[in-house]
Image (cartoon, rainbow, N blue to C red; front, side, top):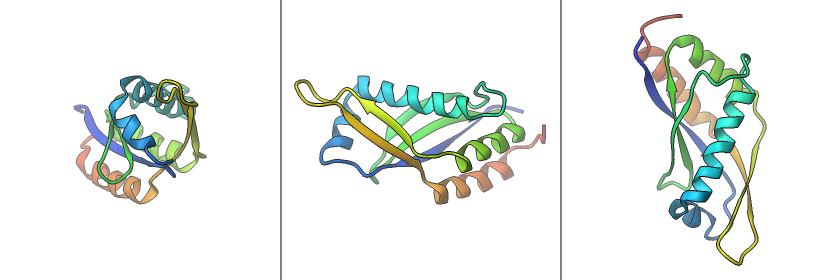
Amino acid sequence: AGDFHTEIRLTADWKEGQLDRLAVSNDDLQILASAVSDKLSSDSSSGTSSFPLAGLFVDDDDAVLARVCIAEVGCLHEMREVVFGSQNLHVTTRGAPQTESDEIKLRFDMTHFAEMYEDALCSLEELT
């Protein structure tokens, strides 16, 4: 099967200005991307990510979208187990110069994930 890209939506209780700083800070986005990637791989049954992170974006609805690659239905099911079995994801970013670091407590948007999962399941052709 060809690679299929989809997005996982992550939300948080953002502090004032935190999301705006994140949107313009490549360093903080990279820290966040590494943490999300680590979470996806460390919680997978194989211990290695079968759905690599292709990108991380701040959207207009106060959330972060993690774009992931899914090669087959088995990977999609593995991602489902990671997302449904996951606790909050804590990430500490650098923060703006001369300010304290920010801790971000992210959580998977389960409604968005369920909708994405159903669409992806129908889009993937091979079952293995």
